[in-house]
Image (cartoon, rainbow, N blue to C red):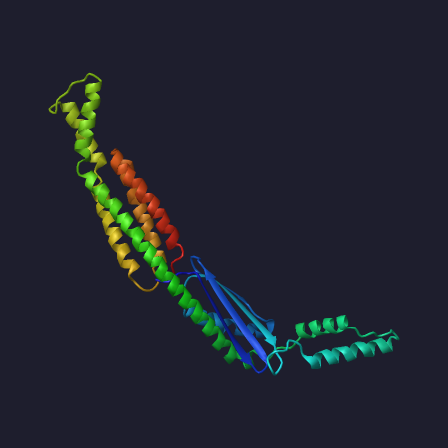
Amino acid sequence: MHSMTGYGRASALYENLEISIEIHSVNRKSLDANLTMPREWQLLEGPLLSILKDHINRGRVIINIQAQYTSESGSGDFDKKSISSIYNQFRSVSEELEVEFNATTDLLFQLALYAKKNQVLPDAEDVKEALCTAFKEALAALVAMRSSEGLKLKTDLDERLKLLSSSVKEVEMYAGDSVSHYRDLLFQRLRQADLDLDLDDERVLKEISLFADRSDIAEEITRLNSHLDQLIQFLDTDGLIGRKIDFLLQEMNREINTIGSKSNDIRISRHVIDFKNELERFREQIANVE
């Protein structure tokens, strides 16, 4: 089982260019990838998304790729040659226009920012190998985190599954004597109304028979138990299970609603409410399963 929530990061160095990649994902019904990268490398978007689809099937995936030049030592942030070139151009223009040129530290800083912002990146094909390698590393970290989160989800879902099974067992236990329970309740109300009828009264027997047909929940209980068995199998299966379980939960919700509408036994009604509450919590967790 894999969660759709995760984060991965990696970096690579191409000559004196540092490439950093961050990938994070959240739940989404289908795969929705959003890639941000330098415009010079847009040609690589297709190959990168192809790699992504080989490892991720569902979720909203945000990918951020940035590039920054460093000095040969790896500690500098500014390109001195570019700054000097721009500085000389400014001075030359000032002389031509006969404008006084005053070099200040603030001017140098602004020139440095301008040079950094307008640095020309290598061609996409030149950095493709380094970029793809870093992308795969970040993606591997993302997948590892999604797998780890999936294990935590499974532990939680296993406990919730036990609660669902327990509620069904309780409903099944009370369902066996729901007709006799209703019969006793009916006779109690008849006596309270001073209508003392016996078990052989045709009207009473007919009413009880009709109620038995309307309140029979044996089929719903059988289907619920079958769905619970399928749910256990899904939780122990690798691969894409989120959509399958979501559909199964819809079927279980339909069955428990039918049981609730059929039964007039307050004991069963209480467990129906417990089941529906736990089923909703289960569904909230499944929404994050790939």
